Length: 261
Image 1 (cartoon, rainbow, N blue to C red):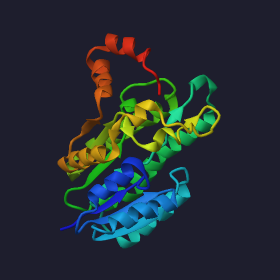
Image 2 (image 1 turned 30 degrees about the horizontal axis):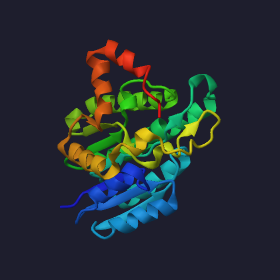
Image 3 (image 1 turned 90 degrees about the horizontal axis):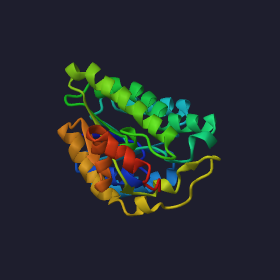
């Protein structure tokens, strides 16, 4: 029997790759993104193998659009099996130079939009036998980093919310997987927001040398389906997470030397 799966950020990067991972016979995909053309391209590929594919175009910055899209999903689907959040935006800018408006924008996209869509869809998710949520955080959700203060803060917020949600609905059988990728080869650094609100517009070396998005998506799907709670995906940059937890003096030494790009 197929699964009904909501995936945000499906238009590109990890979200695109994850949509293809879940585009299996009998699965029903509900793909979401703010970029209509890219979303349509992902959906077209998924239709080659998935049972059905629906698309919803909305911005995670716009609560009214989120509510409208969620209501439309629920009109057709009384229960959902998976909700996987892959939407996001990165940052390149020092806190001292970054306006509160940029902080609010990043928090809306990464935290409040996800929070609202979760609130809307959670009752339908809890109607299924084995409900699962996958949420894409980052290793920046495990420690702060240069030029990522708003980004890291939003990811830390995701951890607090979804760890609490996991505990509150443990008896309902809800599985929540918090996925923390390191450097993955996606275009996210190109659209990262700078101190003045412009796009970074550069493919950072760390990004271009990162793990392929398809490999990351494969690991994500396996982790979500196995119900793993906290998952690290990446290369040697993951060592910083372990240094922060077990050898903080080494973390502090290296963190000051790492190129933020």
